[in-house]
Length: 44
Image (cartoon, rainbow, N blue to C red; front, side, top):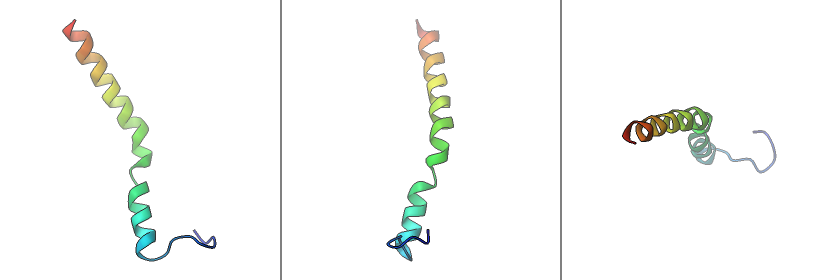
């Protein structure tokens, strides 16, 4: 983050907090999709 114009101070921490959950998006989406599929398959 040493590039010119990169956020500093509080802005850096806000940006970091916003980007922290991004790596969990794929696995969480897979879990929710599997649960939805099982629920829909069981009902029909």
